[in-house]
Length: 281
Image (cartoon, rainbow, N blue to C red; front, side):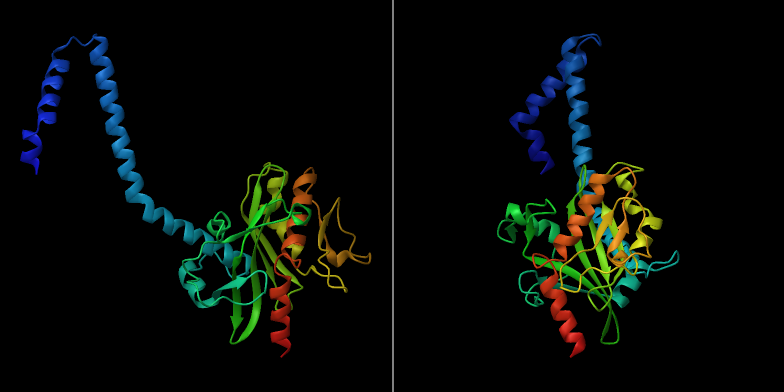
């Protein structure tokens, strides 16, 4: 193959042109441009090769980071945790039809990417403007949820949530107890809110405020919300309130809206109702 290339007309022309360029003075404009273009071409080839070679590693790192975030929101992540082993032993991923709340057994749960599905018209639904309080425009028809079990009993239900804040769409997980009502934790793994303000959604101290909060009112409506200031735990209804993010009103509103949306009938309410029914049965 190499000999055939060397014998080709194009290769011979290249050799002639190369020799011509090398024979020019170093201050020649043509030589300068030719050398610069050659360096750009070589660098582009090297970068492309590196990108292709590193892609499997990038995919593995992304999956590893996602597992860490899921274990974190489930309260199962310690400094010495073997992430892959803990995830395999303690977390059960499931696919859920958002509209019906039923499990989807006909698809490969490991290969399914909910964020990618949301961008595919065949796998997503356009949300009516009047119902899109989370400002996400579209949602995947199938959601990927995660269960923590002890034997056959569910300990935690980890739900993917997303919604727009001030500057970005926040992507995270909300962990509920088996009653589908009591919050265990919340975790945003992808967001670009203002550092020190809306970016405090990742602050462990603020996240800890969610533990034990309730999602649904007695009538079954999702009412959990962020308020301005600090929650007065002595007042009625404080179980449905979380301290707002200081100086980040719009991010706080965005978090409230995304929780209300995904806990409503537009989101996971049908699924949670079936979980509660199954647990009682």
